[in-house]
Image (cartoon, rainbow, N blue to C red; front, side):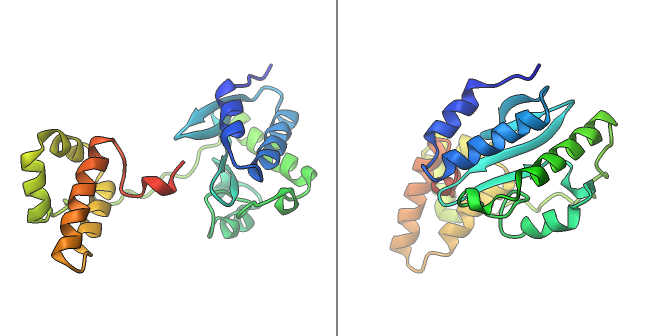
Length: 202
């Protein structure tokens, strides 16, 4: 038997009103197509696992997304990749139930994703990219972290991409006054465990 997760209920209830019927429809279709599916929360949004990761859904400020873990090797991979160009998932930006494909098509995709996991089909190995160059810290930020050791330690624990977002934001400031304000804001957000673009994330 499948397994529902109360955290998914909470996620849907906290989503925008436009998103709730979309998320509920997708959730119901996954359970209909795959009775043994298990729900969980990964990376902050609902995932549906069946013999490994299978598909996921998410709600954003103005749209929802739905995607498959092994989309690259599914029969409609080209269509899914095209939809993925402007949205996280493989159905494009879903703003209402009208944006969803017919239930039969979604169910067929879910069953295909199930079979891939049944057959233990692996995704092709990703090409390894060379490690990113270390982030060069502006002097004004280094001085701020020297004064606030906690912020400096937390900043060092961030990924290179998150560090770079803060550094670029500070360096893009047109005036010293703006730069100093951004440094103060950076220290505050880093202590709170926030990334530079935390406002745009769920």
